[in-house]
Amino acid sequence: MPYRLKRSTTLHKVYYDLHIHTALSPCADDDMTPNDIVGMALLNGLDLIAITDHNSMQNAEAVITAARDKNIIVIPGMEISTAEDVHVLCLFCSVEKAEDFEKELKPLRSKVENRKDIFGNQIIYDEKDEVVGEATNLLVAPTKISFDALQRMTAKYGAAFIPAHIDRESFSVLSNLGFLPPDMEINTLEVSKNGAEKGFVVKNADKYTKNQIIHSSDAHRLWEISERINYIMLPEFSIDAAIDFLR
Ligand SMILES: [Zn+2]
Ligand SMILES: [Zn+2]
Image 1 (tube, rainbow, N blue to C red):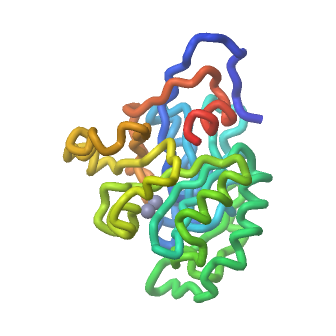
Image 2 (image 1 turned 90 degrees about the vertical axis):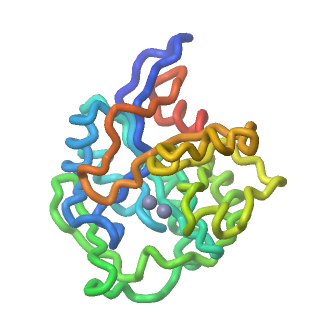
């Protein structure tokens, strides 16, 4: 069970990194293991992290279990590549919800086999960092689900839908669709660390008045996990409160 504070009316400052890849993502280091990720996040003073591998959540539960009894909350999530190859973070209230979502996503995923020599390993770990399997289909390939259909599917599971690194010139909603669809209600957007440092938010302040902006690391290596810099204010220190704030 996640660590919880007693419900109160005061807001809690919660330091987060909501975009972390494990070794399941072929582009991530093999030592992005459950215990090393939790250890680094704690060392950096984070309260809340999300596991967001490409199109799969198969390592999320192991990270959650590795974080049990530690003062950190782990959100199970995925970074989905839509049919337009836009990256979207989908964050869930529970492992069960994320698993059910992945079952629905499975027939829409690419059937292309992973070429380890080109793309890298896709390792599945248990909570003790033991290798228990590997994903054989190439997880970074775009799925067959469109950006707007993904939002509807995410809503069905009560999850947060967060277009990822919108400032980047590839794999982002702005680069691949050209704009944020005005008819879609999107509460939260992610701007990359690099984009934030280059003043993307300030330069575009008039465009995203209805959205809240978050910054996460998109860590593929342990040392890339965020320091205690970015925070959100939550009424309660729980997964439900975090998802409620983000969706
Ligand atoms: Zn991405
Ligand atoms: Zn990513």
